[in-house]
Image 1: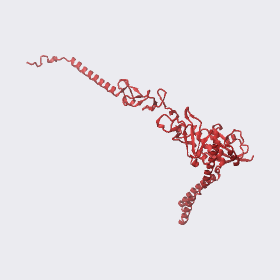
Image 2: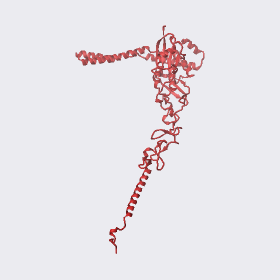
Image 3: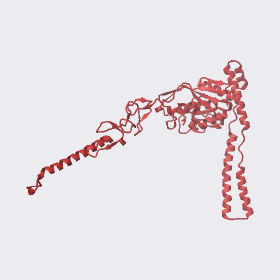
Image 4: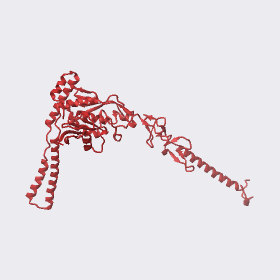
Amino acid sequence: MCPVKILYINNDGGGFADTIEIESGTTVQKLFDDRVQYAKPADYLIRVNRQPAPADQNLQEGDRVSFTPLKIEGAS
Amino acid sequence: MKAAPLSATLERSRRPRSLRLVQRIRLAARLAEQYAECERRTEPPSPPEAGWRRLSDQASLLRRSGQRSSRALAALERRATDFQSEFDSYVERLRAFARRPPAPTFRDLYAELLALEEEFGEAEIDLQGKTLSVVTELIELEEVELGRFRIVLDCSAVERAEYDVVALSANEPSSSDFAKVTHPHVRDEGLCEGEAHEPIRAALKQGRLSDFFAIVDRTLKTYNPGSAYARLSEWDGQECQDCGCRTTDDLSCSRCGDSTCSDCSRSCSGCDCDLCAYCAQECSGCEERFCSDCLAESSSSGRGLCTSCLQERENEREADEQESEDQGESEESDSQPAVHAVRLGEADVSA
């Protein structure tokens, strides 16, 4: 399995965005499980190349994956 | 990142000659220029020269003075340790700088605008006003309808992350204490970002416009009662703790602080403070309502009495006592004969 590079964006916390290497054939679900701990995919807006994506979608070289929490607490 | 070639994008732009398309292209081009300029201005982090100088000076000082004392060596070691952590931090910043995503291109930004329209239905581009805006869905939090909001991003300098959140049909809290509050986390058209602060800046710094709008939208759809300009429970007035109705009367019990409506609120007949039903106590004398400060416990009955009733009771008691004293005295005098028997016949008799 050769690694592929994707742009991974996590809009939780500090707003992480970086190019990372993953194994080819990695699905959206697997990436979520690996990268986002203590959370459920249902609580996130998950997009691949700016489009909503199914959990079993295989990620390809150059994909842009973003996880945006559905709940973000504002303040006063 | 997979994207159509620029020529294909431009080709598509030639087909439907709609204003929206032209605006989208123009805005994407302007933003791309802005980001490219930002990128040109961005410099790599500077090495910790000051720390190095301090370390060198300390080492020279040690050499010149010829000191080999443990104290001088310890000072040099401290400088070296400080420099080491400064240098480690510099290496980290340098790595982050090298890893940073490239400035977004025209193509990226155009794709962002398209994604924005897909998510929000419509994105309004005002090229003259240099703004990009979207309208949220109708937002309702905990059964309070707050309406729709327009998120307006200032595109004149995107990296500054300046934007407004404008309520389209403002449903402000009923209390005048919350002027210009249109959402638990929006006041004077400014969103207090809380958890969204860093992701918003990161998204705009990297040209992720759709992420920026999505983050603001999700923040507007989330309620954090622990830190809100106005709590949703107080939005349509407060709940009267006596009868349970919603009230905007802004009355609260001066004793326990519970909110009350004007029908349930009562004034203390002594000091005129506002009271709820629980804290308003009845004077056992006049049956008027008083606060606990204005009621005193009667020493005889143990029941609450207001000052005037207490005074009245006091006067009555004194009068009773006086009366019984007087009665006692008169009884005493009644039991004594008017003329003492032994002195019988000895009384002065006027001539």
